[in-house]
Length: 131
Picture 1 (cartoon, rainbow, N blue to C red):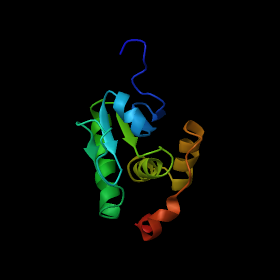
Picture 2: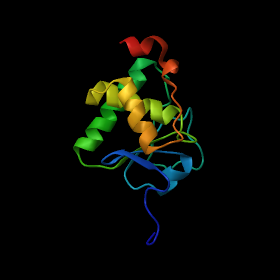
Picture 3: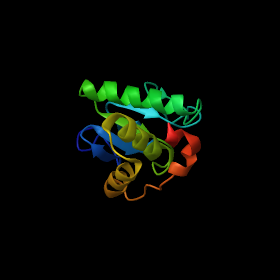
Picture 4: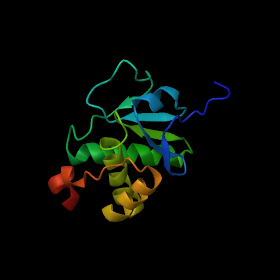
């Protein structure tokens, strides 16, 4: 893989924390968290599958804890969905809110400054944002 970057077109949000798409997952070296509804053939075998909102707020809290634990061990972490513009960013926004003390406004401002294709989907949280 010499000459290729190991993070593809993934965007670094914080040191060692990336958001990307399914293609980025194939090249990424580190922990890969997929928030897709099911495992795709292109998904690396070692990726952790945590389907987006499959268990409501608990899914987001579980994913945030996993991100936090990996970052504490200095592991690069990629959170990805199919295109890296809705589900993965919302998952990382939740992490930034719950684990890093940002507001959702601050989280989305950061996400959109680092990955301009991010679409603000916090409305998908519904009642979960009030927790």
